[in-house]
Amino acid sequence: MAKLYFHYSTMNAGKSTILLQASYNYRERGMETFLLTAGVDTRAGVGRIGSRIGIDAEADVFGPEDDLFEIISRRLDAGPVACVFLDEAQFLSETQVWQLTRTVDDLRVPVMCYGLRVDFMGKLFPGSAALLALADEMREVRTICHCGKKATMVARMGPDGRALRDGAQVQIGGNETYVSLCRRHWREAVGGIPVTAPGTADPA
Ligand SMILES: [Zn+2]
Image (tube, rainbow, N blue to C red):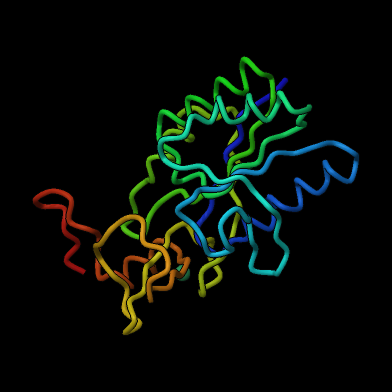
């Protein structure tokens, strides 16, 4: 039975590497896969999924307005696909996640999504929120903080090496870098809990 999967993690946990390895496992057995990635991310060049360890693969690019059910349907018209792999899934809209559920339920093709769970302010990305609500299976891709504990948070570091507290959720290609941290070290890096309502500020 086809399922919708969400593999989530922080930055630099090796999600794209795991995606490319899983796709390779299908292709090695003579089965076709269909790779998609968000158009917003051009780190590996448009239409490629790249990994930090150097392997990459061509991928179709989706934008925020694209109908993924239509795109995958058209691909299936050209021949069978054993599995759809989608990178940068945090950039999906809620509507697009519903389109993926239709792909799984009506076209009976498994869809594996890989993405970040939370942004640098500790908030869910829209695509990740929808996938956490709607995916059949969720798997955490683990990485560790500098202290050795599991990293669950991401800090956006400015050019001066200090963690930023606010800014646009999506910012690619700037001078910022991202560091994966455990929650305690993330709180230390950003200087407390983000103020979301009166009385919730962390005095530490
Ligand atoms: Zn830590």
